[in-house]
View 1 (tube, rainbow, N blue to C red):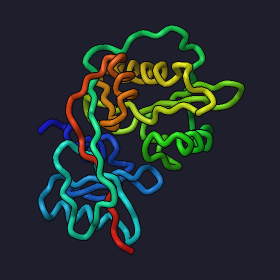
View 2 (view 1 turned 90 degrees about the vertical axis):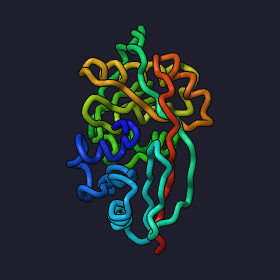
View 3 (view 1 turned 120 degrees about the vertical axis):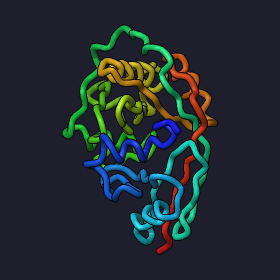
Length: 226
């Protein structure tokens, strides 16, 4: 099995272990960082350990290539299919990148508002600490952003790509996605990303940037009853 088949587990158990809660059977991101969690495998001890990380009334997200086995103590309140895309060639060099800025802790409140408007995936108060984030400002407003999410040896995910509704249609997401991918490649790592299987526009955008669909992924929102 490839490390890419369980990207959440690989990230939580390596590069992001300091941002995680759990042990060698199951881990989840700290509650202010992200909602993703993962068992090491689909054995009952690992699934039980995953369920133990979820408090009554709480939800976590699971994302992996293998079919998701729901622990007995949890219920799936939502299930969907996505695609995992892997960079097959270098990100294209795009002109006009001088207005791209590095985002910092000081920008976190604006990042949270932008993510709330556009819903690029779970984005919480400290999600920006998962990796480097960049953005484009217009008139002092954060018009668009993109950054890094899951990360493990050899690979980093491009994520959090979103554009404020007032600034769509200007190619900002394409420029930022290409810049994030190029920075990952410059570190000697390979960029990958996820998109909903039904989001043909996003898939076409990433294909134009050199990504190819590697596999389908299963996504589930799991909840422990109150």
